[in-house]
Image (tube, rainbow, N blue to C red):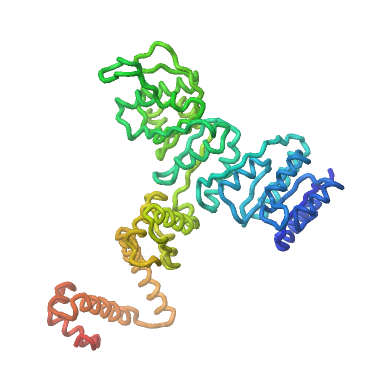
Length: 467
């Protein structure tokens, strides 16, 4: 079989060289171009099996080139790559007909495997043309690998109305993902309805979802359409689906299976066409095993699963997210935008952020109001974040002591205890005296020793400033 014929388009010479070398080593026939315009001219003479193109280039950009390819050469797979990735460009790439979307930096082995797969698709003639959709709204912020996976899935689902289950910790932005799925779907011009099933009392949830007829129960003074009817033709987002009562799980399953339901007190079925996107922070598979969640409903919802990554899984996105929230808060409060120092950025990237993106957003609001200057310092951070720093320091002192002891042993500073014990005692005593502003009686009490013992130790350890 003839070698795969690959064209690479990138204005960066080093990228062209790396890709040409890697693809050639894999036995492929590679041709490189500095611009999309050069490639378009060459296409009039011959065509490759696969094209790998950058987005941002002088002259014709990658998206325009992709559009031209879909018009003139729709059967040729185009792999789009960029160093400036976000949800908009990811979805636009897929909707523009891209075979795949790669965010730089990428693993060169992945590019080789992807090029081979694209060639196989080309040779088997299974490329499906998809029309271009213009995306105007930026939904989710980030460029980490974890969030890029989310972007790709949204892009691949952008022509589908299939059910999706979003999993992830609280505060990770599951509703944002649901809104993005709706915004980049064939239902984008219809209604998006969100309901938190855990936030509504059990007795009211059925009416909230399915509505009721006039006179169905005490207080039902008029017909009320439920969320399913309100979302007809569009998308219904069921947040915290794991908390849905068992009897409502049964009703939901029937709606998914039959596309119809009865209002409370109703005698005639109501037909709806609704896409369901569900979300949970719980382990639904475990709930199924424990009999807390219907297995058939779980499989109905879990057609496609998207994991909403925690902030711990994407620390490289924290600086961009923080600046976004600071700008947002400043606009809301009509004040100057504040920025964080590099030290603050490094520190907050090291935190665990148990509240995830929601906690970071609230922190940005705090800083916008409470930071004394436009440049945010460590001491400006909320107390609970600073206490995390103290906790980390407290956990690390033993490790630091162990490292110092090893240093002493490596340098033959022996006997070890005779060397370290005075250093340790001097540190404890000096810290206590500093705390009490030199008052020995109070320092002795803090240290758990008598005043005379403290005075003797100060003399023995030559702590001159407190003699």
